[in-house]
Image 1 (tube, rainbow, N blue to C red):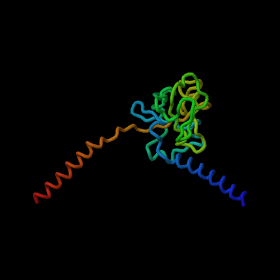
Image 2 (tube, helix red, strand yellow):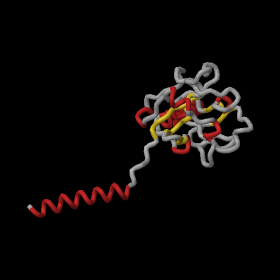
Image 3 (cartoon, rainbow, N blue to C red):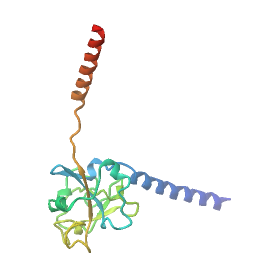
Image 4 (cartoon, helix red, strand yellow):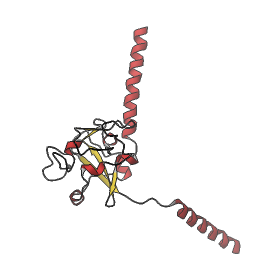
Length: 185
C-alpha cells in the first residue's frame, strides 16, 4: 500500500511540473523577458533556429509575435541590448517564474538579461549567450552565416498603450452627446 501511495505521489508531482511548463508555454511573454527597440519588441525566443521542431509560434502569434524579416535583422539588437535591470533572468541565475537561464556567460554578460525561450518552446528554457549577436559566434537565426550557431529572435510591433484617462474621457463625452440628443427629442 505504501508503494502505491508513493508512486501516486511521484506521478502527481511529475504531472504538476509538466502542467506548469505547458501553462507557461501558453502564456503571454512577460514584460521583462523582451526588449523594445526601434518600434519593435524583440524576444530572444529559442537556442536554435525556427526550423527546429522545439520552436513553436502557434500560441504567441496571437499576441503579434512573428519571425523577423531580413530587413529587420539588419538592425537586430546585440546580445548586450538584452541586459537591463529587472530583466527576467538574474545575473548567473535562473528566472524563478519561467525557468529561463543563459548558458556560457562571457565577460559581456554583466547584469540581468532577458530570455523568453520558455514561452516559445516546451523543450528549451535557455538562451546561449555566446551565440547572440556581438558575442563569440554572433549571428541570429536568419542572418548570413547563421546555420551552425544561431539563436532565434522574434518580433512584434511595439504599439503604445492607449491612455486610459483619455479613452475614458472620449467615451464619457460620446455618451453625454448621445444623452443630449435624446433629451432634445
